[in-house]
Length: 536
Image 1: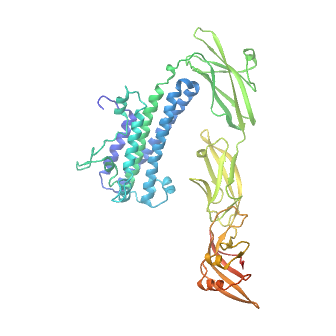
Image 2: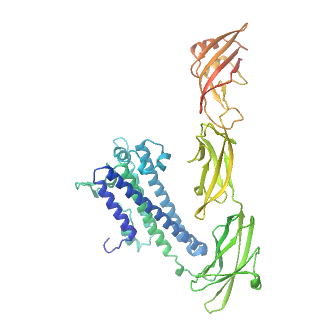
Image 3: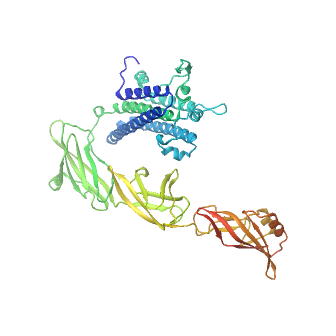
């Protein structure tokens, strides 16, 4: 790396890594654990800023592609490929981090994803994370595949660089892993990358290391996309002509907000201040209509256009951009655009029934017009609502509540916008129906009854909700005539041996009554209705 000057960002990462390495060499005391938390918090903040800066480059990249697709297409396609590879690798690193925490803490993966490092109980444990990353005699760890993924990612990124410039980027690009035993432990013994990073390192250190690896991924991604972007800067564009462009912030606007768009000529000349004339409700505008049009003066080659979104529905406007050509003559370029104004609304619908049941997870689908799921902020007046891998669920509904309201807010221009609310009823699950496998219209043969000697439960047909009630006890009555019954009680869902013997002796048209059926549900035990079974 002789002669190469590191960027401030790379110096910061290197300094963090030196601090981390120094901490690993010390005994794990409370002070050391606290130091890891400080370093990890700093790296996480850095990663967030990395991601934001990278997203800004992608946004600028996409705008340039919008202005000149033919010129920018190849570089934009490569940038999207880099973004896809990078997001996949970042997600993979995060998933390993969460799996390690879940493995060590003995908690579900979903909890490991949201737990803060300070709340991890075993953050000073090194046995579990070493087993997870390095492996054991019977199972390989994940550090090897992680190393291969980082190496493959780095190799793939270098292919986006021209061959003549590739050696320089090979020197500056992070994530360069020395193959074999290119690292040394504290005593100077050569070790491999996996051992160097993950052998006998505590949970707090491993989380910090994984976040440091994410920072290196972001840094490498930033180098490559900035390289790609530099090849399509405005100075490199070659145009055969000029055309007007309208870049709208969004063509879907909520009532009460503003429609915002940038109107500009594709080949921007920042030394000029173009003027825009526009007419609302028009498909086209001619030079003769300038006197009736609204005038906006631009700055540095572009004009910002804002229209109040006061009425619902589809809206359109047309206009003309006025600027000077290289000879000093006024030239005009026409444009037109459409956009939609809609009232704020949210869709909240249960995926089972139009009620929420106590004691169970109630799936619910929530969406808001014009907003992504990640932009939604959901609240509930009674109970809890949580996002899962398959959607939203409502749970922990209190026994004293009979209604609850879900409210939906969405991120909007740096604030929160109320999108809508929905009231739901709260009920207990209805009683299930006891059944015997093989019985049709409450009729069954002795052979079929004894083939499945137990009671099970199903929900009534009008209840579109799945829950497995468990039969805990019941009593079997067999009428003997003259008002007499033979009875036998079971303390489970299974028929007792005496019940089986009594059923074996039954004849056609004999009736068996199952009474005092008790089941266990989400709110505890309950007694359900009896059933009568006729022998065929």
